[in-house]
Image (cartoon, one colour):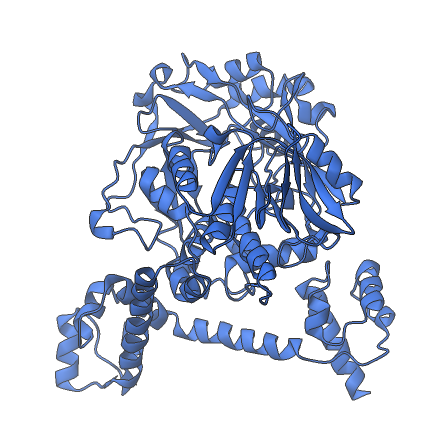
Length: 619
């Protein structure tokens, strides 16, 4: 059976990869272990969050599905860090974990050019260092010049609950053993990572009256710019908050000797920023309590997920520590928490296109790349598919720069630096985060989504209208001046604003902390959409900072064009690791840009190299 692109794995990365490939006109096959589990939320019942929300909005701007699915199945919507600056705000939604995969499965099964096979990929067909297809556990041979692996935690997956171990990719599902072996035989540098999940609690056994309630936003905002805001009225289910206490900590500590991550049973490194509760107690013993979030899993709210309470401790310990907490004295566990170890590929084995360097036509996306999170996976899946299609069509690779998107930051981090622990997106990873805000994702990326054929004409027109209105509104504020005259002072007084101190553009008035969206609306000469008004206000308020970052980008682009002198002695450069020096010597890059594309060469290393080139030119 012949295809143009084969996607292995039906998780968040696989969904975006398969849909993008098919929507770009390629005959695509999605191989997944269980069709019912397409789009399953393996861990927490939420999409988005700080920095992760940026990724979802960027995938949406490029024409992906995750934001639309979230809007259709969300049961609580919140903007995190709303009181802080626009660069660090993040949208987050609780999703119905039953309805979300149903939505995604229906989209997949109704997409033209896309076939689905419920099978386990056992090995790759490779000839002369080029992928040719996939062989499954029932010996079906599927052929395609491009294969995208989005296998999540299934590569030689091993579940741990106390001393008990089970080969599985997710609770109750087979692990992928043959494929892991196949990748190792092909010579890929593979590692071992660990993640985990918490126990799920029977709702009727929780005393919600003693928990702190956390409702959704009063005016919930959809994730997707393609969702009609006028028709967006999701049912909002509250979350709750509780805390661990000294008794909880003592129970956990007294069972450290049974914790797989402390006994040596688990070899893989877990996510540093999302540790299990036993790891948290071990590392932060000075804290007398830890904040936990109690989140509904579905619209029916029959089971609750305790965010921050992931554990691989034995079942009796999980039960005991749960009941030590306020509101959970009579709690019953429906599904126990567990840790899972799995194989991943060193991401420095990948190009920026997410194609492997060793095997032509083989792409990797999601947790196989060393990431953690639905959002990171979705973004990588989309990018892998776009580049696979472009390669088939003989087009230039589609690579987003670090100053263009969080997606660009993530991929550049992974393929140049690699990772030894599950990689999670943070706003702090982006040097130009004021330019890469959640709110302007469509302004930055919609043109690409349209050019790729993933965004329809109406959606692109909607984005373009916001772009045009924003530009026009800002131009008006920057070219229209006010002064301390009586007439102008009266206009500002009506807005409860201080008069202008001298002759200045309206942009400087709007930049005041006291200036709001309502005031801006009355100051502009015509009506603009709410989305455009929000952009105008942010751009006006942060104009100086934005211009500073734009100049930094310009300097960086100019710097990367700098030529490295022929025969340059990299060994003499102090501040560079021996590994970096060896790579530079081996590849002899002609420019700083070429050096930046070498796996393992970080932006900091490029800065040091730049300084030495300048010093060398003076001597």
